[in-house]
Length: 168
Image (cartoon, rainbow, N blue to C red):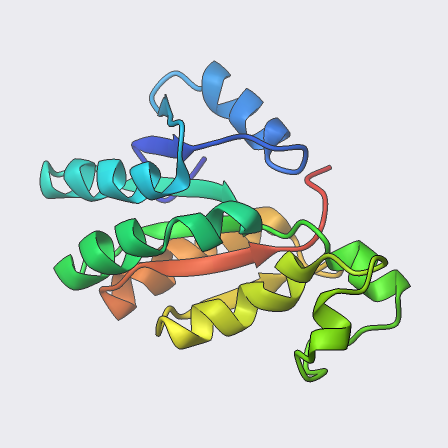
């Protein structure tokens, strides 16, 4: 991992598992596993206050759980914490022919062939005022994460990368 990251805080899932595996083997970056995503933001904020440079990695279902830790701690502190949100449900949404800008109607939110988490991820980031970018299949995730780290520092706020692709 580049860009001065000292800690990776989060919960692995199928998409982020390879990143966590790399961190475990890294000689300088410490892995800090947590039990809840809100805990990840509180812990990362404390690390930042202590002079560390943490990266939070969570799944989009966990983003919805993490609202108070993200908003009430990291964002209110102005902590420039970059975080990666793995995008569960985006492939399913695409297969179902649903676009990101489709209205979130009751009918869409309860469809069995759509994972509502993917429908709610980016509107939630927008509602919370969190700057974010997407990393789809056509974008290199390493370059996207490096840009995320810079963007969080410039914004002086938590900033997100929504990772909708696998880490190969």
